[in-house]
Amino acid sequence: MSQVAIIMGSKSDFEVMSEAIEILKSFDINTEYDIVSAHRTPNKMVEYASNAEKKGIKVIIAGAGGAAHLPGMVASITSLPVIGVPIKSRNSIDGWDSILSILQMPGGVPVATVALNGSKNAGILAAQIIGSFDSKVADKVKAYKKDLEYKVIESSKDLKKNS
View (cartoon, rainbow, N blue to C red):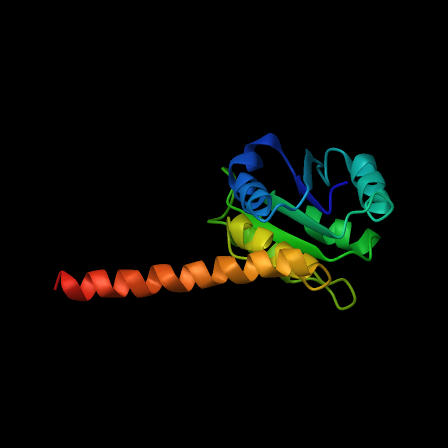
């Protein structure tokens, strides 16, 4: 059973969203993904968001470009945490349209928003949410962050050595 659902507005979003899939796999978190367009398949979106919790989903990551209504519309339907990934699409205004569409949600309908094309961070945030009630996942996230620290320390040593 999947714990994290990753949805995106179109197939062209998959390249960006695949980073979330990969990082969640590295934490051994069961993940499902699908194309769910807020504008072109609104009935599918409503059905998906309405049934996610019943399916055992704990977090939804929703990526969208352009007007980027998918994360907010899904958040308006479900009580699950929704993480929005603004995507710089080919018809985007440098990604700002996507960022603001996801970031500027009205009171009562929160969407956690990561950086433009930042699906890896969305995956890590989803893992941290799962880790708040699953100690095995929490330990994997802690190890991942410790590895980040190690890499920076090693880079610092290399920099000083090569200066």
